[in-house]
Image 1: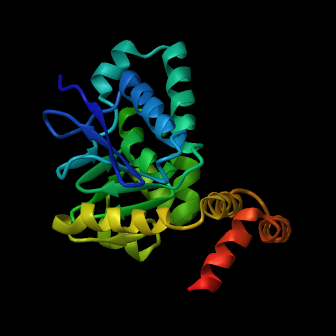
Image 2: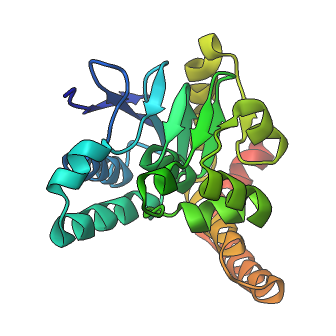
Image 3: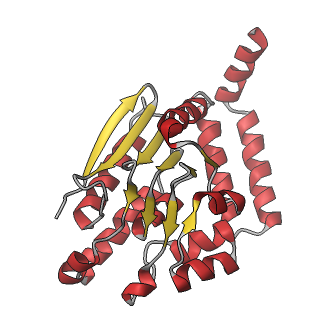
Amino acid sequence: MSITDVIIEKKNQIGVVTLSSNNGLNAINADVLETLAAKINMLDADDAVRVIVLRGSEKTFSSGINATEFVKTVNASMLEDMLDNFDKIAEIKKPIIAEISGYAVGIGFELALACDMIFCSDNAWFAVPDLCLGTVPGFGATQRLTKAIGKAKAMEMILSGRAMGAAEADRIGLISRIIPLMYLHDETLKAAEIIASMPEIASRTSKELIKTAVGNTDLEEGLDIEKQVYKNALESDEYKLNLEKMLEK
């Protein structure tokens, strides 16, 4: 069995988290998920890091859970820990980009869905095969995927296990954009650097407002929240300082 390592790099204000295994499949188990959650939250708490990028290998972002191993080892306590660690990743405050090449399957796909943006290569494939194993998706696919692409498409992917390619994912709004594989990492870093250059408080607040819209908040309530946050932002020291800098140019 190939063990998946979680490698951390810092490039300027970008924290790059790479899933890496000898066979390139980047399978995820309880220990990997715990390590991943700890390292991503470490970057979330690091003032020198403004944006996080989560990536795998060119062959596979993540093949998901090794079903054979999981069935032999899973118990209620382990499952609860895995769900808690997944939530720790999904709830980080800083913007996080999933950089996908190859396959993102099962919990690997669900990790991508928990990120704020997905940039992928043209060889990317997304799948939720849990029903083929006699279970249901357990790390957010029934909710996040449905909100991302709508009921009909989510139903087909989850109930049939059909994989979705990059072109279709782009067409229906699942991903941010497709980038040729040889340029994927560089272009993802460029986008991350632009996001990192934005005012930090405004960036984080915008992320939370967008997540509110994606949630179950109705339009009127969401607009009221946005108006109040906007008023508070205009009165903030950060806004005044950024305005002064802009006027000086």
